[in-house]
Image 1 (cartoon, rainbow, N blue to C red):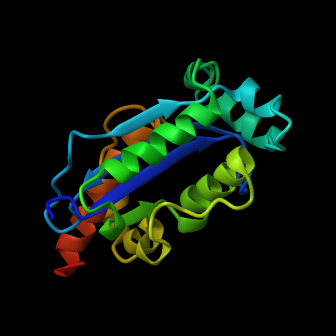
Image 2 (cartoon, rainbow, N blue to C red; image 1 turned 60 degrees about the vertical axis):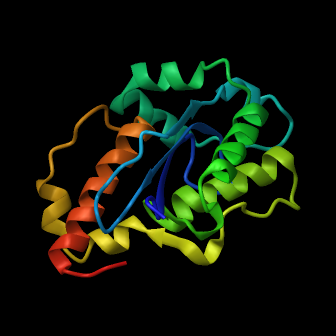
Length: 188
């Protein structure tokens, strides 16, 4: 399998499962070679549709304030999307299942309980509490743990793109994860 890994990044309006998500991105890659697929997933999600849905999506005012300070233009672009949360959820699941050998792909988040945990909670709010992750949870991997083994790699790597745009965050995380694995002379 050429792409053994999938980097997932999300942009949210909170830090706990069940909060509103305004962007999901995913990029297939190979942690051992650094090769990145062009078959990426990136969709923004309308915020009002989630908050007015009656499904109980949460919203953190501190996260909103952070967005207004960090990049209000990007926040507006993502949160005012025409994409309904149900559509994005279905499209992401379809994308993942369409990946070659998807049940054997290691799924990476920049902290499993943030990206992957929030996505799981978001799906539970979207389609019900019976939701089970469509990825194999025993293949979840944590970017922060790996990068903490050689923190100078992450801190020394120039960011390309727009910070907090999930697709650019995915590509940046892939770069420093690959460089960390290479520097440690390990194979994952």
